[in-house]
Image 1 (cartoon, rainbow over the protein chains, first blue to last red):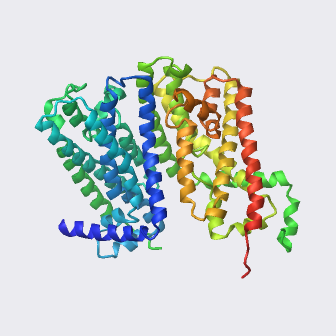
Image 2: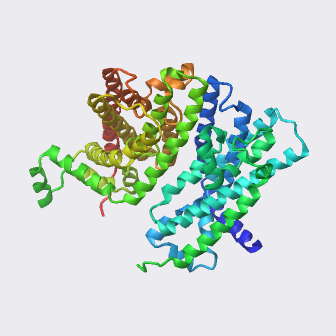
Image 3: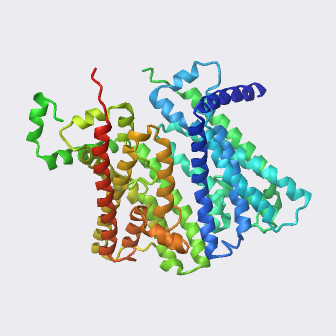
Length: 267
Length: 277
C-alpha cells in the first residue's frame, strides 16, 4: 500500500512536471476548468434568484451540498478520473504496453496525463464549501463538526471506486465509456441538489442500487438536522465509510477479474 | 488551385451539389459505425434528461409559470436539450479540421476540387443527420414514457421544429468552423475549445433555460448566437415563439457566421505556406 502510494506520487509528479513546462497553458487550463465547474453553481444561483427554497432547502444548504459533492468529486476525478481511458487503451492495443511495465496497470492509468487542469474543479467547489459552512444556520456540535471531513472522505472514496468501476466496465464493453458517465458525472451532478427533489423512487435507487445517497446526502441530513424522507434509521447517516469500503471491494474484485480475463488481440 | 493529372480532370464530371451530397452521405456512414459508443452516450444523455427534469420540476413547483413556461414545458425542455447535445455539438469544441490545420494536412484539403467550408459543412450535415436519429430521439422517447411531455399538436409543428433544428445545426457548424480556423493563428486550440465550451453550455440554455435568466443577462443571452442552438428550437417545439421570427433570428446568425468563416478562410489561405517535399 505504501509502495503503491509512493509510486503513484512519483508518476503523478512526473506528469505534473511535464505539464509545468508550459506554465501559461497550464494556468489557462486550470482557470478554464474552474469556470466550467462554476456553471452548475451559476444554475443554482439563478434558481435561487427566483425562489428562496428548493425542495425545502435554503441557498446555504444547497451550497453546502454543492461544495461537499464538488470537492469529493474533484479529488476523485483528479486522482482516478483518467482510469476511464481503459477502453481507448484496449482499442488501440496500448494496454499491453502498460501490462509489461513493472507497475500495476491501474496505477499507470490513474496517473496517466495527471492533469493539473483538474485542480480547477477544486477552486469553485472548495470556495463554495467554505462559504456555505460560514453561512449555515447549524448548531455546531463536536459530532457535526467531525462529520464534515468524514463525509468528504467517504464521498471521495465512493467516487474513486465509481471511476474504477467505470474503467472495469470497459473490459466488457470497450466503447461503453460514456454510459458510465451517467453514474460518475451524473452522480456529481445530482449530489449537488437535495436528493428529495428526485422523488422517493429515485431516492430508493440512489440508496440501495447506486449508493450515491451516501456521498453527501445522508451525512448532510445529520449535519443539517433534517428528517430522512425515506425514514431510514439514524445509522444510515454515518454509513458512508461502510458503503465506500464495500464499493472499493467490489471495484477491486471486478477490476482484477476483468484484467485476468483480458485477451490482447495481439496486433 | 487545381493540380494537374487524371484525377483532377475526371472530378468535375460529378455535378457540384452531388459531390457535397456524397460527402454528407459518407459522413453519415462513418459516424454510424460506432453504434455501441453512440448507444452508451445516448443512455447518459437520457439519465441527465431525467436528473435535470427533476431539478426543473422542483423549480417550477416553487414558481409555477416562471418565464412563461409551465412544468410540462420545463420537463420537455430538459429532454429536448439532452437530445440536441450531439446534433448541435454542445460539448463539441471545433471540427476535425482543427487537427488537419495543426498537422498541415489542410493543404491537401485546399487542393481538392471543392470549397473548404462547403466540404466540412457537408461532412457536418451528414454527422448531424445520424446524431438526430441516434442521439436526438431516444432521450425524448424515454422522457415521454415517464412524464407527460408537451408534444407538438400537429405534423406542421414537427416540420417547423425540423427546420429550426436544421438552422441550429448550421449556426453550430458556422461557429465551430470559426473555432477551427482560429488554429491558423493561435496553434494551441485548447484555449479556444475551453471558451467555446463555456459559452455554448451557458448561453444555449443547456445548463438552465434562458427563460429563467434574470433581467439584463436574459436580454443579452437571447440575442447571442448560442440561443439559436437550443433555446430557439425548443421554443419552436413548444410553440412559444412565432416560427418566422425564430427562423429569421437563426438564419441571420447562420449567414453572418458563415460569411465570417469565408472571410477568415481567405485570410488563412494567404497565411498558409506549403513547403514542398
